[in-house]
Length: 234
Image 1 (cartoon, rainbow, N blue to C red):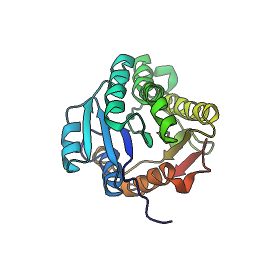
Image 2 (image 1 turned 90 degrees about the horizontal axis):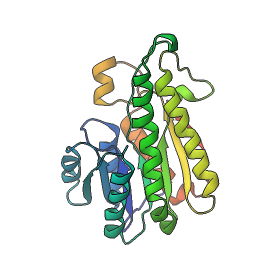
Image 3 (image 1 turned 135 degrees about the vertical axis):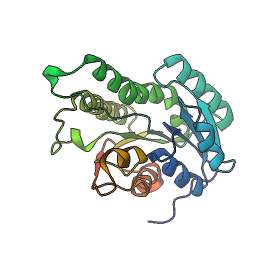
Image 4 (image 1 turned 30 degrees about the vertical axis):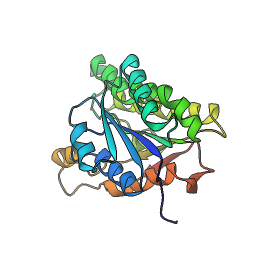
């Protein structure tokens, strides 16, 4: 595969706030490929992530579960990007165990749907017109736990949300066929600061750099014929 070049193109990344997470490395990979980045997160730390990229990124603090805030953020990015973006990468989300369904707290389900599915839905809805202009691509983050060979024991809220993300991706891929491509990565656990703190250094991880390589491929012309797919990373 030839080197990916995003020079002169704008890429929107959600969920790029905290250090040590996946978004940090994905953003760096896009910046190294020449992209202009619009980073969105609910946390003020997104300004630090943008500053680390040396002027190639803008930071936007936004509650991605609030439709009005997401729409307003999309309008600002549209003005800065000339009304066109090359890619939207929905990194916003989070994990939470819920225990057996019979003993679970409905609040866990509601939170998981909000942070994983609602964020992806609202971002997609807000940025689709810009993606159409750019003949762009969307990457979603599902989970290996919701693939046919996965297990969602004791994590029903998380699994329901990630299954919803896959359904959203497939809807967009079908509705935008020939205009905007949509695919999902479905990783096992990724080596993030949070996962290492919870599971230790020696667990089996997908490296963040491998995730970034997969994201760039799915957003690049090399994957021009790939849409509607869930790709497992392990």
